Image 1 (tube, rainbow, N blue to C red):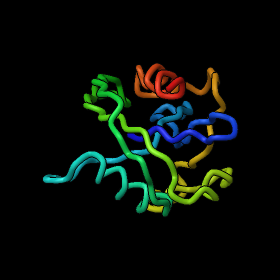
Image 2: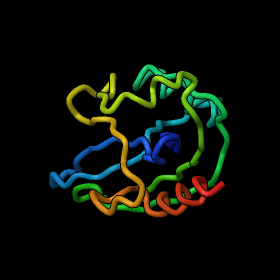
Image 3: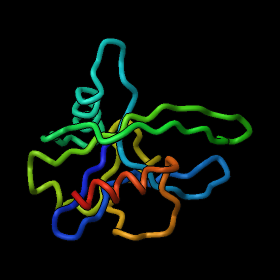
Length: 135
């Protein structure tokens, strides 16, 4: 999962999706690490695949463990949280995008700083994002 902040206002790049009940939530973009792949390489690959953007300055800022309900099942994930910037500064001016490999399911938007809803997941990501923004 990658924290990308827009320089002009500190907005956080997120995907907006709905849970099985239809409730909206936000989540920073990211993906699954493939066997033998480093987390930073995963971030670069996923951003290229999902929104066609290259990343620069990728570095790890934390790890979160997340146990949550998804529909009627309990899910468990370990999230490596990275920070990065877009290689192309013009990418910061794209207001909304769709995820290329998930058309019609999730949209990618800029979440304003301090936004309280919809919820930002996983639990603890807002604290890491705020800590990273203060650096």
